[in-house]
Image (cartoon, rainbow, N blue to C red; front, side, top):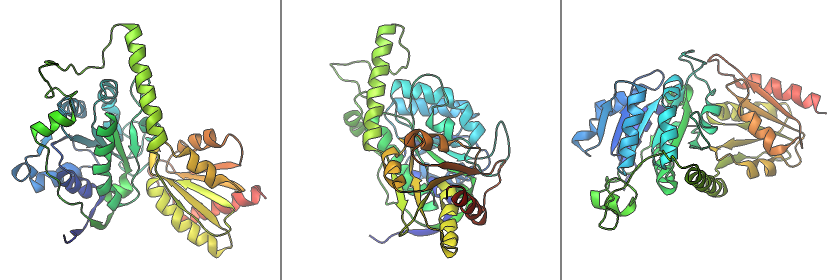
Length: 362
């Protein structure tokens, strides 16, 4: 089958991929810099070709609760927003985690806090990886670094969400969402039939049988002993996810004595910085976490061996760097570099930080 190749924005790639991977429904609300997702879906009109529902809800709170309902029926449903909109969805995401419902959320980050700016940022790392709602729960978090990964991660997010009955987030940012690149679109995947959903999702509201006439979808448990059992079950599931689903990309340079850790668009800028640094005789490897949760801790420990220092590059005040420090427990010097307020660092700035850091660690 001939590949379909198009030039498009990251946000547009999300919309195209959602249709092609058999999504049953999208419920969302426009907000910069991710509005192209719902705009593209409206232009493509998938309800006429695949039967996919596309609905602009009255708010982010309404859209996440629509996702909750669709997920409870075993459907492949997703929503998208940007930072303050995702903040409004946190209660619903926590409900879904507690009820063990699969759903996909796309966050195209902008600067904050509050309404902040419409410019790019990576300052929702804590919100995504720590769980912005109440209780002890985790969301699977994928961080794309290209428009191609924006397309690829839609199906992957659904796959992981249904495998573990857990919410999954694609944590992008305004750089990846708005930039245009060549994309190989995924092949069309048919939407599942009602019978397939009943077979694959016996827990769903439509998965009833003679032996179980009613499936109750809820995160509520009034008995404390039972609630503890449910929480322990969730923690065991999270241990399994951490063990099997940590993803990363490691780019190595021969004889490198420094390591840069960065995700998403910051990793692209860091890669260029490494090329510029090599012209000055400085050599560094690059570790790009693809899953921010589960964080690729073991891969980081291996990559850090023999390094004189680690520079963590983020477009925030220092969030992922805390996970890096927790993983390495003071075994190697760690320094953070970030820009705030929607300012995206350039590769020359990173080279300067690497140069100064290397002098300090000599």
